Amino acid sequence: MPNPTAKLRARIDQWIREQDRNEFGDPPDTMYAGGTPLFDERTGRTKDRYEYILEHHPELAEGAEDES
Image (cartoon, rainbow, N blue to C red; front, side):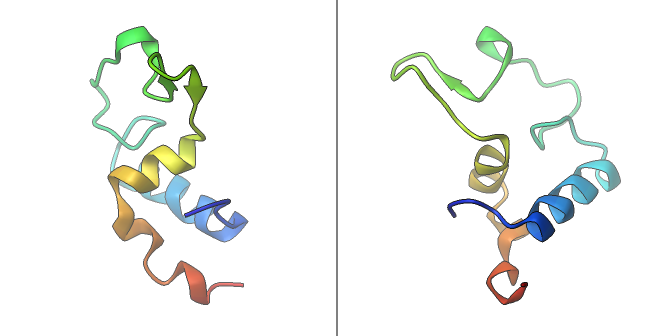
């Protein structure tokens, strides 16, 4: 899902707070090689935080197409 809307980003941020997740939507004690799950060492590409969260929690985007 390219460029999540401001409403979807707000929904994701609220879900993170309510579910006691870390800033990447993972359990709070999750550790990452390189310190972040957003950087792919193989490609050198840095992924958007919301893109990462939606790849791991696609249910958060359900109904987002109807929001405007």
